[in-house]
Length: 206
Ligand code: SF4
Image (cartoon, rainbow, N blue to C red; front, side, top):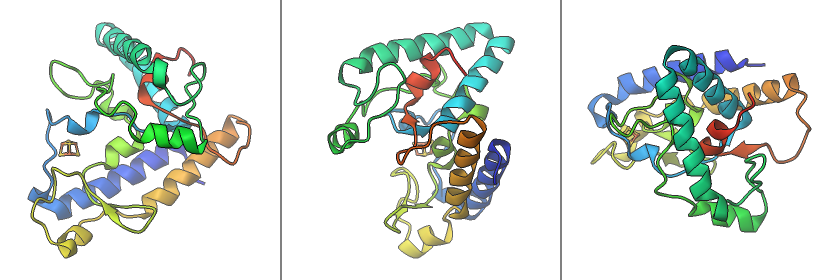
């Protein structure tokens, strides 16, 4: 089993290793926020980590924390009319229609954790796993390699392959999610709980 804390350590180590191999091929820098626009599915564990991060921020910087929560509530209000899921829990629906609708849902919506003034993440230490791994090449379910369109400009397929993140992080995330669900006695389901960051941060329960 992989604990939630171990997962973050595993992913951050894999990222550091990939960054070292990638060098200047990576365009990531503070203030680059293209990947902070457009919603994507996150796990219950990601949502929990984000809420803990927001709680910690509320203890050290309540004004920034309140700004994050306000942006999350505003985002939920904007997205609710067409959200392909349950507005009460924030759970994304898993019907074929809902999955198709989510493909093009809220593609320009800014992440509520993104500080509009600095274009940096107010919850960086608590960010979801996908935010930690976006940028470098990462293997996809169909055995391709996904990479940020701003990175590896002009790189050969071999160069991209050489810099890929350790794919073991995918199994580690699944193990951590399973442990988290077991610890919370979450109801078992064929479809794991998935939500989006605005709903996770607008929620009042941890
Ligand atoms: S992943 Fe892409 S969009 Fe995000 S910070 Fe890196 S270069 Fe910018």
